[in-house]
Amino acid sequence: MTIENISQAKVFGGWHKQYTHESQSLNCSMRFAIYLPPSATPATPVPVVYWLSGLTCTDENFMQKAGAFRAAAELGIAIVAPDTSPRGEDVADDENYDLGKGAGFYLNATQAPWNTHYRMYDYIVDELPALIEANFPVSSRKSISGHSMGGHGALTIGLKNSDRYRSISAFSPISNPMQCPWGQKAFAAYLGKSVESWKAYDASELLKQHMAKLPMLVDQGDADNFLHEQLKPETLVHAAQLHNSDLTLRMQPGYDHSYYFISSFIEEHLRFHAKYLLA
Amino acid sequence: MTIENISQAKVFGGWHKQYTHESQSLNCSMRFAIYLPPSATPATPVPVVYWLSGLTCTDENFMQKAGAFRAAAELGIAIVAPDTSPRGEDVADDENYDLGKGAGFYLNATQAPWNTHYRMYDYIVDELPALIEANFPVSSRKSISGHSMGGHGALTIGLKNSDRYRSISAFSPISNPMQCPWGQKAFAAYLGKSVESWKAYDASELLKQHMAKLPMLVDQGDADNFLHEQLKPETLVHAAQLHNSDLTLRMQPGYDHSYYFISSFIEEHLRFHAKYLLA
Image 1: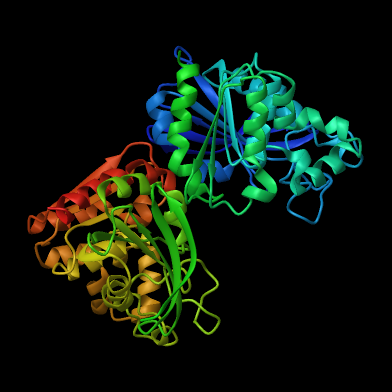
Image 2 (image 1 turned 90 degrees about the horizontal axis):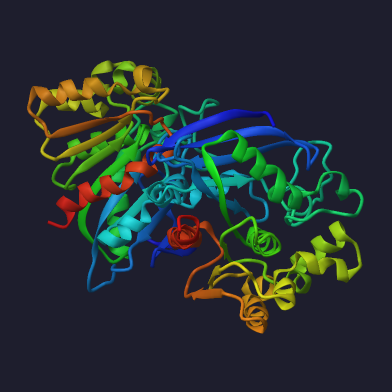
């Protein structure tokens, strides 16, 4: 449970810090970032929003580009941004951006060569929160959010662990990965050809099975180049309706898939989570 | 005066757009970015804040990392971010980050090999505003701001062109380049060995000569690694006091030289400029 601080910068009265640590789940060295609002002290621990990033990202994309810290500082919420896959020279990879490093898809791989390192599900659900709660002035209250592949991660992890999180949100999530090229490629590689095993990592499939126990907010730009082929939010909405799950999907006219979109609405997502984290 | 749009993204109801054009001042193709708030229309043109970035930057650093658009959208102010030097294969360069490409220092070079392209002063003062005002729904009201080398640029250009701008601000500016390693290296290369010619591009020297006609706001982090060797804000303050120039320097405890610092205070800078731009 040792972590090593490698950078820190004051921002909106709080601190952005990066750390490295040896991950047991992933069997490699990992980097993560945390934003601690000015109100976070051992005597006044703050809740945490976990942010899962999309394909090709590291811990840095959200922290540098989302413009989330003003609202997080005001609300008194910490934000943790992990990396998107295991890292290191001995970690299996693919020449394309949508498989291997930077494309862990927040699942536990069962297939070689991926299954020696690619256990991002365990890392996000168990190892990282334990590490965060042992090392920083935060409470065990947490919510989860993410973008694109990370929106898929936030939805599936939140739906499968409703006892651990208070609320779920996503920007432009891969809502039905079993039915889109990104998801089919990744699931076939990481999980094998048995499509039945894929359902545990598909937000639309999870919503078809049960009513979600957590509130969900999803924002999707209607000028997003990936909307129709890869993201399919309408499938998520239909699945949520089957059991009256509490999902709000907002189609945002004119917005694309970029961090310019995320930055425009991240404050609303943090305020949504704050309703449940600070209640 | 032809410009070519190469990207656009909706953000906070307005638009971030990048363009390329052939610069006459710089004798090369240049890229710039503009943020247009939602209120900008031909019938309701908005004022402009020009943002000058620091060493190694392009038009993208500020636009992606400063988190400036929420306030700009609310205030109804456009932001223009030029590149920091001429670009292209035939443009003279240096192997170090602090001279040549990415390090134009917002001056007109007089020395070979720099004098064929490095005329960033003319580009920022004349060519770019003319281009912006001819192509976008903006008024001729403008202010100028920047960071580090760009803070030096904002101060010197604003002080020398008080009829063109309404207000000046800077983050962590190189306040007295004649007396610091970055400035001495750049000025010797671009302007030659005659130190007298350097004074026209040194904010502290300009403030020693005359009272500034424009209000100036400067923020400086006291945990900035470059503070004592390169930035020297105390020299700027002393020079401003000689003729009662309207300079506010705020030392910000714990902040460093990064965009995390800029993002924490950019809204206050935009509100400072709005007082003069929207009066």
